Amino acid sequence: MTNTAVQTPTIVDQQQLLDHWQGHRNLTRKMIEIFPEDKLFTFSVGGMRPFSEFILEFLGMAVPGLNGLLTKEWNHFEELKGDKKPTTKKQLLAIWDEATQQINEIFPKIPASRFSEVDTAFGQWEGTGRYFLFYFIDNEIHHRGQAYVYLRGLGIEPPGFWER
Image (cartoon, rainbow, N blue to C red; front, side, top):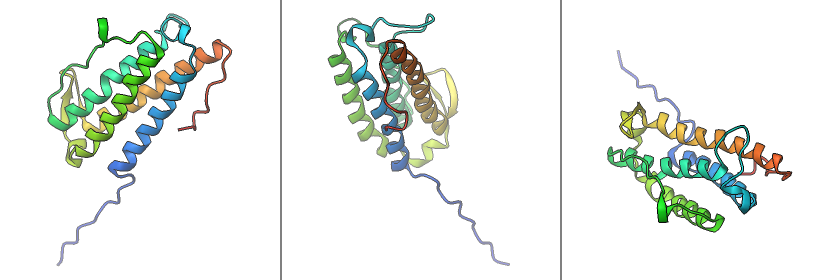
């Protein structure tokens, strides 16, 4: 009797997943661009945080999280404070663009096996690399949805969610 290995087809490869995530990040960037600067750091609805705080959360997870997946060293996400914390849309977009470049550099270096390994992210959350990556993406989508409500509340038509 011969044992025949059954190969499971891959639905998306690592590059396609990176492209998917960067598509979402591109849409988030569009949201930052159209958000009125005088409201970006202050406007909220129902006690939620301003959109700029959501952006800082995304930034605090993305590159540090990928570094954790790559090196297995999960430094706490970088909190931008004091002189490093952006106070203008231009500064926020510059930090966003720098993170985008870093994501493109780090992501392909992560061994595929890391996406199935269990780890503890940021010293707090246990899960697989795949779980963490999906969390980073889902968290951005969730908070971007809140920003859609903010824009509509400000009388601004947001970009279509499909415009990635």
